[in-house]
Length: 212
Image (cartoon, rainbow, N blue to C red; front, side, top):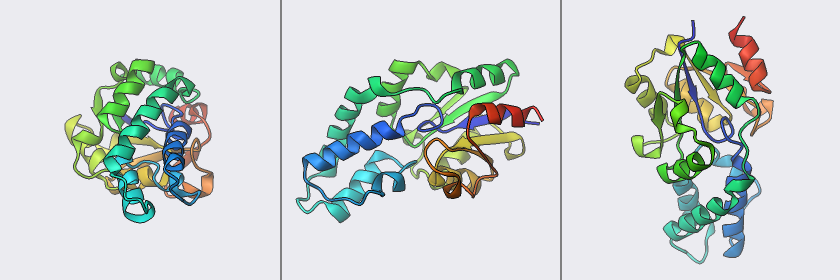
């Protein structure tokens, strides 16, 4: 019996990964920083600070302070938020599970600042019994700490909890915390999500699975 569902944010609740990538790309291009096309997918599920530290250490020959690039990315992201959409089916799905008294938690490595920007646009915070963001753990996805923190704080049992994720980093985090993981193909193709317990193309498919 499922009593708790944990949700990632980017790619699971909001279709924000393209917006994050667009903002990062604009900043890297503005500073003429060369980067592989795969870099944005490689860091899905990890904090932006980790991304820009990598840029500083490995890619930026000008050695621009990564904190400055991060702030510029945040500013650009704010400008792009009106382009963002909720993941199709999320609203009806969470409304239905709340009617069944299933507890919910948002478990994300996003910063409190970024979540605040998104929350002002979509009013998400009130949908969850618990919010876990970057500030709540020292280590972030793909480490298990965010999900371990959620399990301990809510509290919840791994035996009755499902995690909904969209990225290899997020799946690894949840699995190492002992959770069962449902993956959505919103950000990656199926072959990249094979470590999940089940893979779905939509919330309708997840809803049908939960009623079986």
